[in-house]
Amino acid sequence: MALSKDLGFGPDEQLVRDQARRLLRENVPVDKLRALVARDHHEAYESKVQPANWNEELWKQMVELGWTALGVPESAGGLGMKTIVSVALAEELGRVAVPSPLPATQLATAVLRAAGATAWLEKIAGGEPASLAVTPESGSWEPGDSDVEARSAGGGVTLHGKAAFVQDARKARLLVVSARGKGGVGLYVVPVDAPGVTVKPDRIVDLTRDQATVELDGVKVDAAGVAAAEGKGA
Image (tube, rainbow, N blue to C red; front, side, top):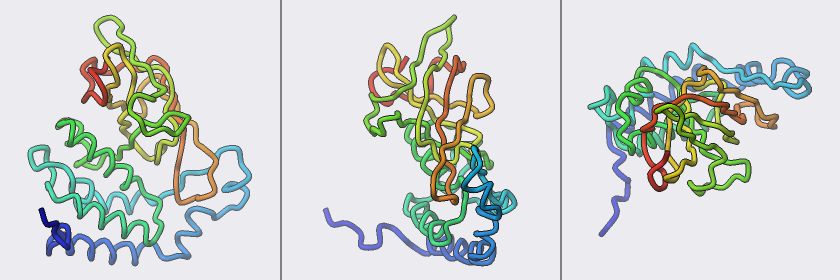
């Protein structure tokens, strides 16, 4: 089967890309970016906890423009646009290196969309930033290598363990966590402010990014989760 040369990048997708390019060019010039992420050398590179500086007003503008709703199906309150528009948007964000939870949110959206998690997708479309917490300390991308365990408890499930290399964990409000249970590995959505969740920032060189290890100590979640990443989950 022949593949489309433009991968479905049409007028609507071009409109979003051009809109993003203008907004980011106006709001994230190099001097503002440097002042935002490294205004204080000691705080940025020498303190025990690096800051997670980002422009929350710019995030609100992104939400108002519908960027968090682009990949969300219309049935969940989104715009239901093609994946290629999210790719184009990520390219524009990378062009100016803007510190933003949007790329992490787009990845979480893709996973939740595949899982049919309508209720959580509605929250993302409404502006809740999200991130994937699915990677073990080894860095493996294999679903079965999660360092988080899902334990059955009193008719529910609690999560124990940690996820590494979580992007924009201090900006996100929702985490999509993979956890090993008796039936395999399942996916669970966890609010960052849920009891038992601890976010420990990593010290990294690129201050435009916010990376962390997320520890989960008896975090209560919906027993059904949102999907089975491998097997039947808990």
